[in-house]
Every structure is written in C-alpha cells, then in structure tokens.
Image (cartoon, rainbow, N blue to C red):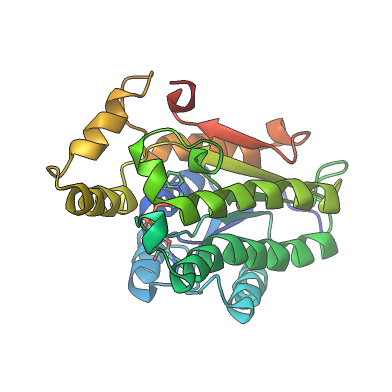
Length: 266
Ligand code: NAI
C-alpha cells in the first residue's frame, strides 16, 4: 500500500524522552508525522508520548528484542516505518588512564551496538515494505553521531576517549549501512556540536569536579569558541533531521553532517 498524500510519515525516535530526541519528536509531530517515541526511561517515554499524543514504546537499544519490538509496535499501529532516528546515547567523562573495560563496553554498547541494533531492526522492516512513492526510497535512517567522532579539539576531548571512539564508529556504520541498503534506504548521520541538554549539564558538572573549576566554566569556554556566537539548541538539530528525512535529501546517503555553528572550524 502506498502512503496516502494526506498521511504523514511514520517516524520512530530512540532516546526521545528528553533532550535532542524529544525536540526531534516535537518537530516531526508539528510537521504532521506519525511519531513513535522510545526511551529506556519509561517515565520520560510516557511523558513524551502523552505530550505529543504519540505512540510510546519503552526500549533499551542495547537489547535486540526491544529494538525489534519497537519496530513491530510502530508497524502494528501505523502500518509501516518511514524514518528511524537512532538518537539514544550516553556520555561519560573519565581520564584515559582511569577508564576500565566496563566503562568502554557500556559506552560502545549503548552508542554503537545500540545504533546498530536499532538500524538493523528498522532496515529489515523498510526493505520489506513498498516505497513511499515511485522512485523514492523505502525508508530513511538517521544516526546521531557527534563532532567528537571527528576531532579532538578542546580540553574535554582528552577525557572522553570512549565517547569519541563510539561516535567515530557511528560515522563508519553510517557509511557501511548506506552502501548495504542503497537504493532502498538512505542512511545519514548528524554530528551536533554543543547542545544544551542534560547530557551537557552532567558533563559540565563532572568537568568541574575533575578540574576543580567553577560549574559552567567548561560550557562558557566552549560556547565562546563557536563562530556562530551561541550554543546550539536541540531545535537546530531537528531542522537538519527534518531536511534529511525529506524528499529534498532523497539522493543523499552515507553522509555525516556537522551542525555545530562552525565549532569544528575553530
Ligand atoms: P540526553 O542525555 O539529554 O538524552 C539521551 C536520552 O537517551 C535519554 O532520554 C536517555 O534515557 C536515553 N537513553 C540512554 N541510554 C539508552 C538506552 N540504552 N536505550 C534507550 N534510550 C537510552 O542526551 P542528548 O544531549 O539529548 O543527546 C542525544 C544524542 O545526541 C546522543 O546520542 C548524544 O551522544 C548526541 N549528541 C549530543 C550532543 C550534546 O551536546 N548534547 C552533541 C553531539 C551529539
């Protein structure tokens, strides 16, 4: 069944309980998408679903059965899955010499394996469903990487080696998946810079404890380095996600796009 023009695309988002994921969910819902919000935190997942009158499916992205169930629920309710946004992620600040194998496994478990399992579950469904319209891809997958996966600039880079490695792996996964699933599915990654969410608040708190500097200092220093003169909002990220999910980006695949106010250029 080809999607009727009046019905919005079905867009599933992991880590949508708060922060960037929640902003993505709001932005897609405002555009008329049939949003499916998912998060490991059942309370925030339910709150996002209730706010947006959307389907909420709690899921831990490190669990393959949860990822498959997320896709199954989306399809059971909405009939198909047009866009999957693998956004769930974690961050930890710890000097390289203090990192242990558990820290490493947890970080790569959520950020890399979690992205892989969500992407795989979504791709299985998208490859099996008819295209949106003749000549258009059957689905689109967006992964949430980071400029941290590209560059080591800034003092904090030294204490997030496992986070940086995880986001570099997400960029690589994007390229492999784009080739594997073309032309049926496009796969692209978003690389935000400095987004004011709980993740950054926690990072600022931990940096302050580690370095013995006042709270807020790390944040202010990084914002001062942004050529565009301000921190990024989750809505800035949502604007890029909506473009990548739109027909205007149908020919783009395998790309990892910085949206960082020029921070990487500094
Ligand atoms: P956040 O910490 O505010 O939100 C992350 C969400 O992911 C939370 O709702 C959390 O419950 C969920 N989550 C964590 N582990 C999960 C799991 N195993 N399964 C399902 N959900 C899980 O973080 P924020 O800032 O919204 O980040 C979202 C994404 O954007 C992450 O992948 C992050 O690495 C990336 N990013 C964030 C930047 C920033 O400056 N805040 C910059 C670049 C990338």
